[in-house]
Image 1: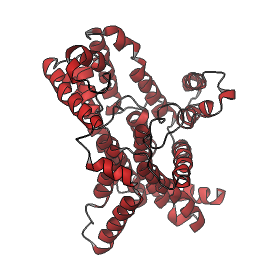
Image 2: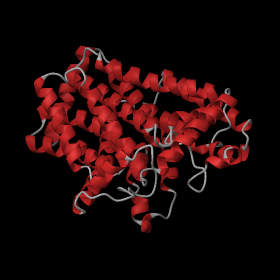
Image 3: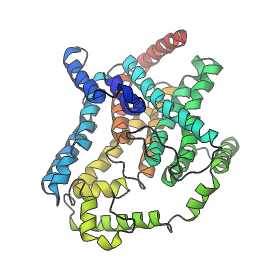
Image 4: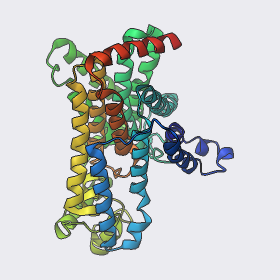
Length: 405
């Protein structure tokens, strides 16, 4: 049921094919997953510092909602966070073995690849040209090109690490097929016309190679990568970078950020209220609305700060730091080298989310919360095994996977 939830939320077949959109499928599979927790004897409570932080963040959101300037708006949007807490706890407690994690991760990769492959083909068929709407996913969290590009930023490093981890155990044909996942994801980022996502991609590549960037082979590879990215970037998109900070969209976002900081300064403890940024902006900063109406602040930290104040901003920062620490714990592990690659890939995904999140409002989208669930499930399923035992079991599982292929 939890695998079905991930597939339905990411691929959205019920939106693509209206004929099957006759039941609330995502709600039904979540209920099924909850019931399964009580019937599956292997399910055990998984402890993590992330659990505590998520609960604290929920309590701060509830308190902020009660004290908000517009509490009715806060409570109307409360499910946009607490449902992710439910999903997070379901994932970390159900996905509790190596085989389950492998299956769950494969569904995450295949669902994301479904988006990246189809949209990369769409962009190629229109001659890699620029459009104002970029590339659009199915109705849901990834319909807008900006949010779609962030999912690709989260997806491609994990897909790249997954492909390289299996390189020595699969045929070359399978390896090239798996490498289509990160390649098409990068193509979607370039075609999505999201400047923030494209900047985040550059940061990811630099962080990925910063230790070896001055080695001739690595330097040439990075140079070629940037050259290819710039070559495939449409001319209209390059012009958007040249006008960054001067166009209407940029000016409006700068006003959101400046006044958002003022909101936090004036309401430091719990902010102006959960999801109260837009109505508060319209009431107290009407002269700074230049695009018709006030929207969300287009910055994850400004959103959290105005929603929950400095208290919530501190907890949110600790959540991000905890995620990075879990990823680094795998990078420093004494287990398989290829396994540690996955930890670094997860941190690259998180960096992509944070950098792109400086330009869009995606705090309560699935990116971070599913990322946290995958990390904690990964640590619970793999990280607690002794290194030698981990290596022996991994070799058996990979051979079994190879035989299945």
